[in-house]
Image 1 (cartoon, rainbow, N blue to C red):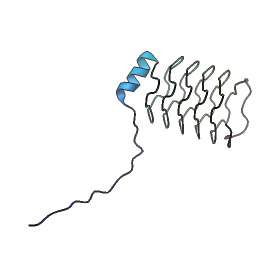
Image 2 (cartoon, rainbow, N blue to C red):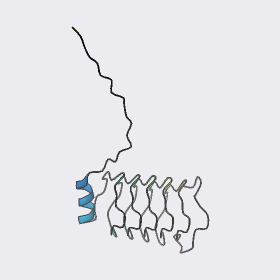
Image 3 (cartoon, helix red, strand yellow):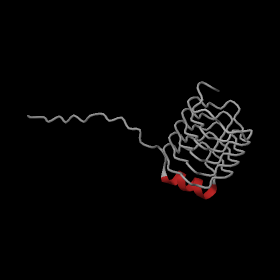
Image 4 (spheres, rainbow, N blue to C red):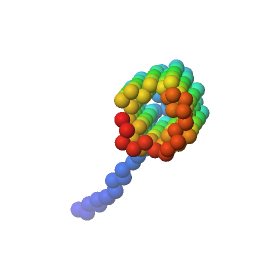
Length: 142
């Protein structure tokens, strides 16, 4: 008896975990607390006032979106692209923004208590008090 054994290499994937249903739910209702939207393409979306507390948005593309007044408390935004995003008045309390791209983002009036901005790029971002961030990335701040 001859047996053929096929070896399949283990491929580690960084594939997105979001589902199309969660993305549609978010766009329709602006509410998806605790949802896994990691890696989702949401660039240019109107998500003003969205309820996204504890949502996983790691690696998501939210560039040039409107997240003004959104509840992102406890959200995971690691490596998220928030270039040019309006986050004015957003609640980012306890949010993890490690190495997030916030180039040119508007954070005026946002709540950032206990948010992790370690390694985040805040170049040309408007800070919570309306001033312009002059540096590049934030090192080790929490």
